[in-house]
Image 1 (cartoon, helix red, strand yellow):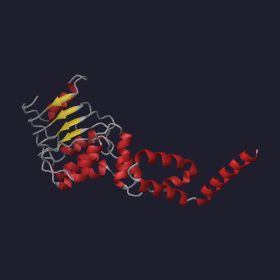
Image 2 (cartoon, one colour; image 1 turned 30 degrees about the horizontal axis):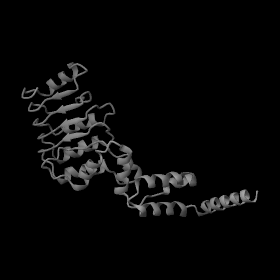
Image 3 (cartoon, one colour; image 1 turned 60 degrees about the vertical axis):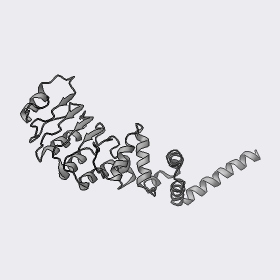
Image 4 (cartoon, one colour; image 1 turned 60 degrees about the horizontal axis):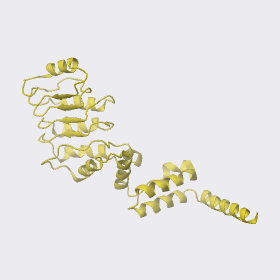
Length: 242
């Protein structure tokens, strides 16, 4: 449907009338502005390149991206006049999105300030839990010829791994030079074997992190550790005597 002067009214009609099995919509070089709220949830691929979106257009798209029912996996916004503010709006819509892998934003008047909006979405460093819950799905921003910041590019590359648990772990190790063990203290020593196992699996290249984390865990409850060691020793002694 390229080059057909289709505007928002036409898009709304297509959304309502196209068969359910149509999951790709190509509206490049039309007159789509997204000047009002339109649900874009049903499509897996949506191409809007070279459509001049209104200032509220990115917000319309972000609302769909933030919806848990959104099916979009590939979104083409090449040369859509997104700008830095629009980019920040789109990035925020992806905070909890687990479907979109590709979003082309080339030639959309975006500066480094705009690209940096993706940094905290792809890897929220405010806490380990926040890093774990970051977006591990988005892989491509259509960066051919675009100066995307190095840290954003790195996170996009990490997201290409299909094992999302490994993606989350790698981001945690990248972002946190020191793992805060305090949230685990309430679980006492029962959780320590799991902490060690996680560090063994994911932090092979960071022996310093493994040792410091275990040390912090043990330091927080020295008597528990002492009692556990002494109790184990007494049990072994009784076994030998018997």
